[in-house]
Structure formats: structure tokens, C-alpha cells
Length: 319
Image 1 (cartoon, one colour):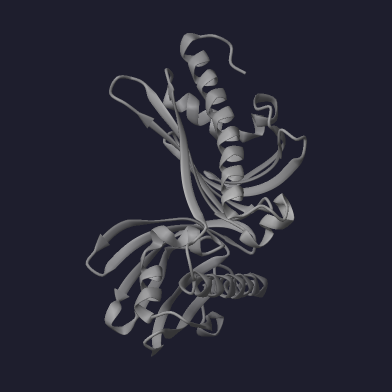
Image 2 (image 1 turned 45 degrees about the vertical axis):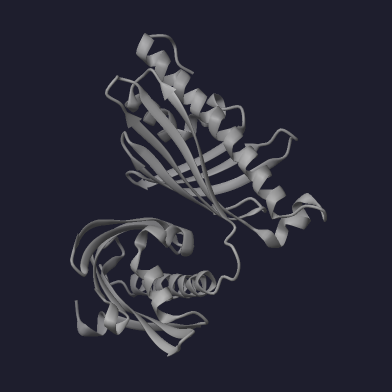
């Protein structure tokens, strides 16, 4: 690597919210999938004082990637520095800093700095990284501003459904992980296209049929962890939603039973409620409809996974 191969960027946004409030959103990575469009999943692996190791799963130029980063919080400066410990090709290394600068008691400026280099000497790789950084930085800063400036209640709701399975966690996981088989195993799934270039990191495009005969196309990135569950985030959404993250959670219990939970977190796209449901519909109508539709499909999948796993446990044929 040569010094000339390192690129630096700076992106900024002004936010009509107090600096401390904005800093808190950046500090808590658990919230990131609900704030930042590129982020699929984020978690703190370990923490020691103001230093932490986090792992992120996110899209870059539409491609799912995962990496770990070391972060150092300096709240008195409004600063969070980060440095990737394990980058994914074509990134050779990347770091930077979030800086939140107060402009007044009720507003601030957020600066997002990056420095990076490619894993190869190919200029095209460095250009690819630059495009990804520009796209994600602009998207993240706009989303951070929108979340911090939110007036009134957020249209974010979380709900879940659970079934008990008298079978093995591995068989349940296999059913959920093997989404290529869903069109023949699940009546509401009409088509699936699944790619998995990185083991455990999937892109799932799916056509889902509804009771009225219509078909909705969605696309999700899934983080798969044998045999405990799958976390996902939709990037192509139905018209009524502006956010949909989910989790399939598989838990083994002392008595030998396994519980499987489908958890959804969604945000209603209030701007399209009247367009989709009619002029008399409101956000409550949309929430009820979305919950009914998602729970219905989830329960169908859960019961199919239950039959699959219990069939394996008894030696009976599985679908």
C-alpha cells in the first residue's frame, strides 16, 4: 500500500435536534438497523470503558458485507472514532470518525469522516469503495437527521408469534435456512431467489401471495446463525412499510422442547396509507392490516417448520 492509495472523505448534515440526542443514537449500535437503511444487523461484541468491538452486517453498493470495528467513544468531544479490524474485499482497510458539533441548544452538525484503501492495486476497487462510502454516508446521515428530528410518535411497532416444537433445533433451523425449498413447502410463497456468496449471509428475493390473490415481491438480507436463528432486513418493501426487520429465534429448553419465535419490527409508511387502503384508512388501520398479514404468514411458516422438525424426530417423511 502507498500513501497515494488512501482516500479520505467527509460528509455532513445539519440536524434540528440537540447534539446529545444525536450522539446517543450513534452510540447505541443496537438501534442502527432501525435508523440506517444499509445496516442489516449490528451488535456489540465486547466493551471496555469507552472502547468497544462491534460487528456490522450491511449492504455496500447493494452487496451484503460483514466486518468488525473497534470504536472509541469520547462524549465530551461528541466524537466516536472507528477502525475496521476485519474488512471484506475489496476493502483493504477503513476507519473514520463521527463528530457531533452543537450549533445551538436545539441543533447540531454531524460530520462523518472516512479514510480507506483497497485490498488490491486495481483502481476500480478503490472507485467501488468510494461509491459505496458516498452512497452509504449520504443515506445514513439523511436517515439520522430524519430519526432525530422526528416529531410525534414513531410509527414503529414490534410483535411476535411463537410455537413449541417436539423436535430438534437443527431441523427447525434447516427449514428456515433452506428458503430455496419454500415454494414447495409454503403455500404463500410463489417464488424464491436465494444467493449466499458469504456463508451465513444471504440475499432472499421472494414473491408472496396474499388471500386476495395479489403477489408482493420483497428482497431481504439475512444473517444466519446455526442453529439459533436468522436475523433479516427487507430492502424491497411492500407499499405500506418504510421499514421491516425480523428475527427467527430458536431456543432449546431443559425439558427437550424447542420454541421458535418469529419477531417483526415494522414502520408504517404513513404517506401511502390512503393510496393503498383508501381515503378513510389511517395509520391504525394500516398497523392492524400489516400485523394480520405478517403474523398469518409467520404462523404458516412456523407450523410448517414444526411439522418438518417433528417429522424428522419421529422418522416420518418431511415435506
